[in-house]
Amino acid sequence: MVITYYGHECFKVQFGDVVIAINPIAKSSRYKSARFGADIVLIGMNDADHNGASEVAFGGKEPFVVRGPGEYEIRDIAIKGFEAPRAPDGCSRTIYFLTLEGANLCILTGLHTASLPAPVLETLADVDVLFIPIAGGEVLSPADAYKLAVSLEPRIIIPMRHGEHKDAVKTFLKEGGVEKTQMESKLTVRRKDIADSAGQIVVLAPVGGE
View 1: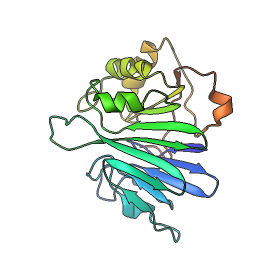
View 2 (view 1 turned 180 degrees about the vertical axis):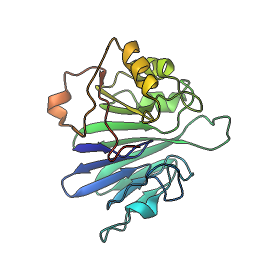
View 3 (view 1 turned 45 degrees about the vertical axis):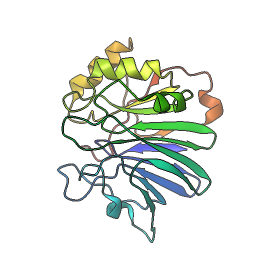
View 4 (view 1 turned 120 degrees about the vertical axis):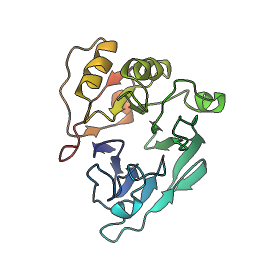
């Protein structure tokens, strides 16, 4: 699978001819929206920064849109959505866990606390790729994000919300004992290639900037 970052908390995950859009940015957001065709859309928060499903209904695609907690199976992909602890802004957030090509992905959309419900922690016992916000403020601080990330023991950690927060990336990397890392334009994940990885941090550069 190939993972591409479009800024804020928006990603495209492609494997074969199937495309998954994670938290696509709406046209009304202050962030730059992405335009690509998706088969499946995962929306973790119902606001303009995350719910731009219409922006990825493109190129003849009519995506199946997942908007909250529940269990789904689409195109042989198992998806679980869990309600995350509510933040002070009152907006609900959904944590997604999905399995594709033998790899387990977890998206911690807009997470502001490291205290996760027991059912979520049980499901996240075997995470290959973890997407986690690190900007601080309304989401986890870099230090808290790193502590939570390593506690879940993922093979790969992908930080989110870092386009406007360069210092957050530096702090997050420092927490992991990494002084400097090069931003990648995309990440190709093969389950066999990451089997021996443990907590590897991959910082993706947003397509077209943020």
